[in-house]
Amino acid sequence: MDFTIDQETQEKARLTRQFCEKNIDPFAAGWDQGETISTSVFEQMAELGLMSLRIPSENGGDSASFVECGSLVYEVGRSDVGLALMVVNGVFFGEIMPLMTEAVRDRWAPRVAAGAPFAITLTEPEAGSDAANIKTTARRDGDEYVINGEKGSVSYAGLAEFGLIFARTGGPGARGVSMIATPWDAPGIEKRPYASVGERVTKRGQVVYTDLHVPADGLVGAENEGFRQAMQFFDYNRAFLTLACIGAAERSLEEVSEHVRTRQAFGGPLARFQGVSFPIAEHLTKLEAAKLLAYKVLSLKDAGLPHSKEAAMVKWFGIREAYEAIHDCLLLAGWPAYSAELEHDRRMRDVMGLELGDGTSQIMKMVVAREVLGRESLPYSRPTSA
Ligand SMILES: Cc1cc2nc3c(=O)[nH]c(=O)nc-3n(C[C@H](O)[C@H](O)[C@H](O)COP(=O)(O)OP(=O)(O)OC[C@H]3O[C@@H](n4cnc5c(N)ncnc54)[C@H](O)[C@@H]3O)c2cc1C
Image (cartoon, rainbow, N blue to C red; front, side, top):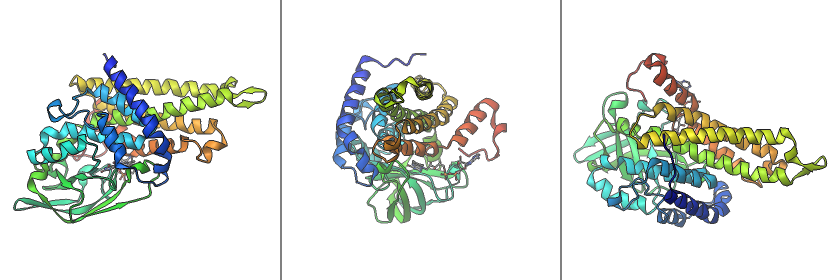
């Protein structure tokens, strides 16, 4: 299996890191403390091509491979995991473009490529892991859909220019759910960004739809099939999210390695104690293993091969490992890290969010078990659940 990162991508990754260190690092702590990110950061990310990685070349994008995309998501994650989600959303948009009507594609593809954030709204107060059980409805009324319902935990809820709404257009289960695109300033959409444990740059929040009218050509994919069609694209996503978290963890390990080389205690540098150096060595080892598994997922995706099992494996294992690595870095950095003078605590909170977002660790393990043991291993019988 070949997941070589070619010279051109390495150069893009180098430029991305340079950009992030100059334009993201100095501001990430402020965004974490509640400042609103300037749209110019998104525009600059877009100028670097980060928002249009999988938008086809004929629509002004890059048609990058998934392995390439992963290496760039990793770079952004080193600086800010929440912003890496923007890049991941951009890839998702590129992937679902073939499902869009011309109206949706022509309106939003250029905006995404220019750096416009958008929201994907699936989770509801009463449907998270059991996502196929959502209650939000989209009722067809002439040449419009009328949408009512409530969504929770929506990344970019407070910053988006448009949204992709999952809503029930048919019967129960996954087969009754459609995906519909709408401008985010439409009457009938109430956004309530809330205080989040991490990834605060994304202004995550609750969204309420009350008699929201959306032209019917906002439908993405076939009616009642949007959920199933979109889910096909979600597996690789798990490798991206993991790479963003590994980026954050490796950054913390680099910083703490420098610290323990210079910090003096008991007559010499901390680094000479195995109680200090071994956790660093162990985390570097496990993160490297997770990184290789993530690139394997993306390489399988590039080759058009199945990768659900590997994607679920890497999400629960890699993100947990990234969290634990950063936790240890925080402890090895001592009290300054606990007073939030350093970046470890922000990274730790950001990474923890992705233990939940896009499928929890328990759900990932269920996917692995299902792939190996068959559907008999599932604790529920509904055949249409995600
Ligand atoms: C940082 C972050 C970003 C997010 N961004 C978005 C977004 O942009 N759009 C969006 O729609 N949603 C988003 N989400 C929501 C996310 O997808 C859900 O949190 C996730 O699907 C889990 O749903 P839940 O939180 O309702 O937990 P629940 O489904 O209520 O689960 C609660 C706990 O029970 C466990 N559990 C549930 N079912 C089982 C089972 N069958 N077996 C064993 N354990 C089980 C879960 O693993 C979890 O630990 C985001 C969440 C976070 C934290």
